[in-house]
Length: 463
Image (tube, rainbow, N blue to C red; front, side, top):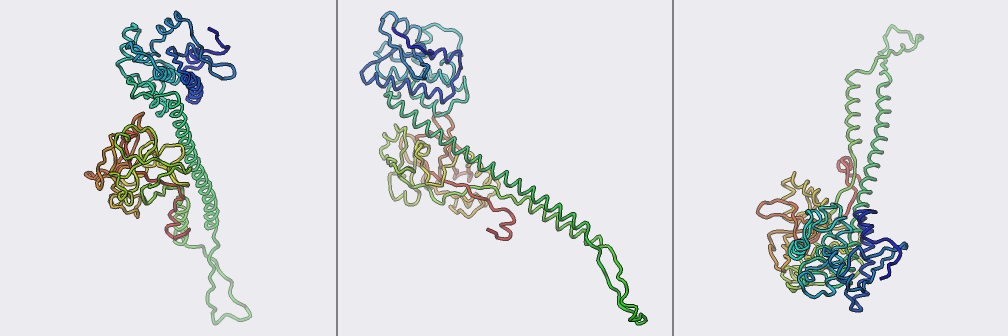
């Protein structure tokens, strides 16, 4: 067995870094998967995959050391029980999916800096084997909470106990990681751009407010030094024309006049300083009804309930698979469609996150009239949002609640299985956030940010 110069992966995880940053872990696991994919194409099964035999070379390449000695293979299997698949430990034959399981555990360890069941006191090999075969793995976020939800979801798919629930091939594993990463990076970029826009608007508003304060201070100073009012008394008959007009006498402006001027300026100060525009959300008037991503790629329509249940990629359907429902209510999409990196919303629009829905709920919770307008499909309300009672489709493919309840996806994950959505409960007349499995089919409503009109703009109908 020839070892290539470099660092063993188990040393990097254990001593050099601990939990690897998600981008570094992603880079390494993708390179390992490429090696495994090539081996699988030659019908080579490793069965001994673990970080102790994976080299990261000085030029950042990955080499999986081949182990040909049968005695050494047995030793590795004994030492690396935690990386072995449930079927191997159940005395069943190993296959390509057994390597997928091992890779899922390796990804888990890179991200968490720990192995599953590591928080349990030392145990016998027999006990550990029983846990691997029969118990759910610890959530890796118990060790390192900042692991992205979508990566936890992929780890769960790679380490499923039943092979029928597990990722099938290294190629599929690679595809899931790349799609998930692109969607996550797009989401981070959108959140950054939104935060940047809000910060810019805030800074501009503060700058304008300071300029107005300085200007008003100058005006107040001028008013306080207002010139006295002059008054010319009428000429007396006894006064000689030669004497000319009498000299003008001066008196100071009355206290009442000064009080009026001061009140007007104070009111003007309040209106101007607090007339900050900021930004607000402008919502689409109808549910999304597209069958293509922003780049023109088609989104598949999936009618069959069994096929819908198995989906792990974007898809859409009409309620009850009836195109007539689409004319009024739009399409129902699974969560994978709205987070696809190719983009579901039309150019210039975004899919709302949990934050946008929370802002919407805050407005509606304070305004019963607006809540009623939202339920009645009237956008002419304080929130600028209205709903269509489009119902939904559950993870088994069953349709429900048409004409009663609207459900709208957000881009925010609740956990590895579920995502947040907006729901209007017909029996409570209440708009709230809920969470449902990502395989559900819900409506989608886009939004975009626009400049918010200030008080003075509304008062004087300024553009």
